[in-house]
Image 1: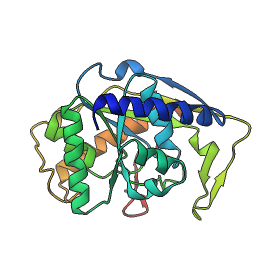
Image 2 (image 1 turned 90 degrees about the vertical axis):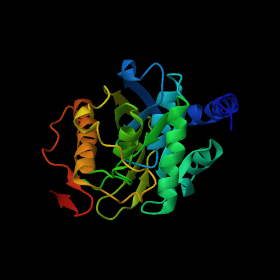
Image 3 (image 1 turned 60 degrees about the vertical axis):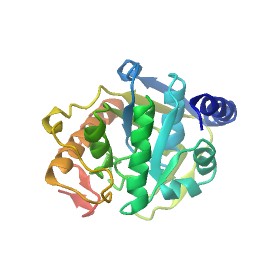
Length: 249
């Protein structure tokens, strides 16, 4: 799909999605000056609910950016959000498979054309009891180091007041009224210069990892966590929740 056609599609979707979203949430953002004015870049948000992609997409779209999401495949089966993701040509990712490597290759092409790629490094909704970001998969770091594209951390808070998952049962609850406040904070690009000599092979399976890529990913997740701490006006935990071990490292 050409960028012109994609823009028309986004305009049509926005005419439907934005009024519906804003009927249940008041969206505000800060830090838009950190969004690169030109060239491809990677957006890395925290992950609270299935509503997150709409929060991030509307924020970027209203700042003149057409985002392309690399999101876990199950999001494409979610009501409303899944339909929007499919219609706008977003990319589902099946972690640890050849499809995941293909998704990174598609993302690389999007960055080369000057586009914005959105990746959720956590790969799933946060399991942290305090709703802080968890440790991440290495895809965003691998893509950034292979392309030189800046990584922009984005934190948001308030989606969970609309669509929530009770811990630890995972039971979904919905609250549409009254409207909830959803806030987004865009941070400066993450400094990945300590790892700039790393050039990962994007054709390798997504679960192939090295200590260096883990360190770069940790830097990305801590940048997202810092922005979320400002939004929440709270101290972030010193250690991220480890999604692989179900606790803090």
